[in-house]
Image 1 (cartoon, rainbow, N blue to C red):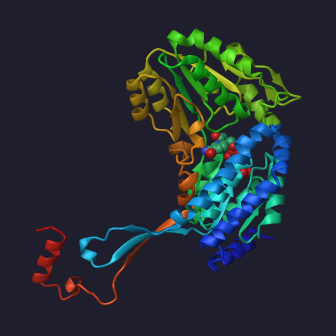
Image 2 (image 1 turned 90 degrees about the vertical axis):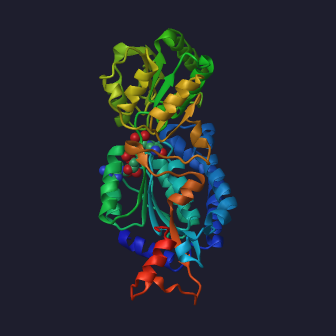
Image 3 (image 1 turned 120 degrees about the horizontal axis):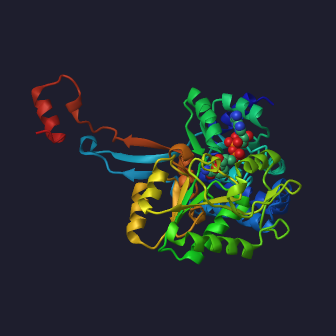
Length: 456
Ligand code: NAD
């Protein structure tokens, strides 16, 4: 089927009001949940086939999050869907004013490969909760996950409501030529630009969930063993292939040696290995080669073992990294962590401020003045004080970037809002009329208008 036919079918279904009622939305979400519950093992097997992610990690980072999302939406939908009353200004009295959240229509969701199921399905859940129809295009790089999602969705959903399209650049390009009512993209800033340009042709609203270099700062006032435990977990989860993983860490020079040892000890304690089911492969040879090129062997403080047969890089710490080094020019997106010494806190802030606004930022610090400076000086999508990554797990915190790291957000209520339009309505009683706005325009009418508008 041509994409234009698929869109026409979804648009027809949407216009026929099949997606909008509370009952329709609940039914779609319940169906989604049944699909996830019935196919849990298949999804784990697919993600494992892509890059050997273990069931334990797939449960935590791919599957359970989606079930929680659905449960939250099912519980909160009546409240989220309700028209919100707002006060009516004097000029319009008597009358009432309210804002109605309405679905946008036919949505395109384009997924990334690094959490292939979660990043594809979570926006779809938000879109269905908001009463839309959806075409999902998962990343072709996690091919097994994409195929599995396509198969199970075909078994559970009418394609007029929700369907999966498989493919890479050619198929996505063809999809982007169509006129959607909303495009939700997760991926790199480079492809984000392509999506944005394609959407602009139709004035389609977009949400761009992008990436970038997310900085962490480790200060002397932090509880160092705890800070490093949290940083190591956040960085080497998914072998560093996480959009909000700490990309590099500024470490105060007075604690640099101690921290280097603690980082090393923590990595060793965790025994990261595919066999231990707490590590994953690099997604493909191309990304392995990219990371290998970024790795300056003279600067390896720990790790650095590359295994082409297994497609892995052992957890790696870099020291003596200069700001001009290749590793500081692009998002690392792999298990390599540069530790950069700093002398002055302001200097670390200034470096981050001079670069693109990151998706996340992390501060490990118990000094209130430094915490306040970090919060006010830096612009970033979201972040943590004395933790890393965990802000993403709170559905009450909107998740998204700013500037080059993205535009728009989702999770919980903000996902519902992202896929809804807030329609403003003013309702006037049938007969009552203030004649002031109508011609003839007289001096007395003008006096009254000025009084009403408080200009006299
Ligand atoms: P990517 O941009 O290469 O691919 C994302 C999607 O775009 C895929 O579905 C792919 O098929 C499609 N695509 C690729 N090239 C295209 C083109 N020329 N035209 C149209 N579509 C195209 O990103 P990726 O490698 O899958 O993911 C890595 C990037 O995504 C990193 O920058 C990471 O930080 C970011 N990311 C962000 C989030 C977030 O939530 N903000 C989550 C995960 C990943």
